Length: 145
Image (cartoon, rainbow, N blue to C red):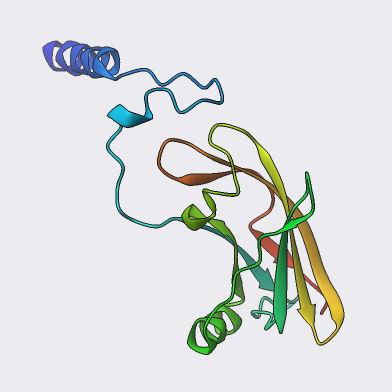
């Protein structure tokens, strides 16, 4: 019983010691946050009805509020990895200049084989003080090609 009380007390103490970051759309409190140096990405995995990865020829990512094209250019090696896994980037930490902190931003992912659009999906993403995160949207999609 003492052990449970001690664990509970430690949890309460650690919760109270955390600094509060107000989600006001401002970067208030971010100067006191220690961020990790890893780059985070939101990716969508595309599979066919049998579960095999879908190899796209190209993708397009658009910020829906104003139609801004957020599509990145990738090397052939990167693109070959995406195709082999069927996993394609939607947005990442490097999009911080296009996706405001503490606001929900709608983006559209489109994938093409040849000139034919085979997938279109909408996502809502946001940034905290450090990294991007997914608010809504499906991360695995089945496409009929």
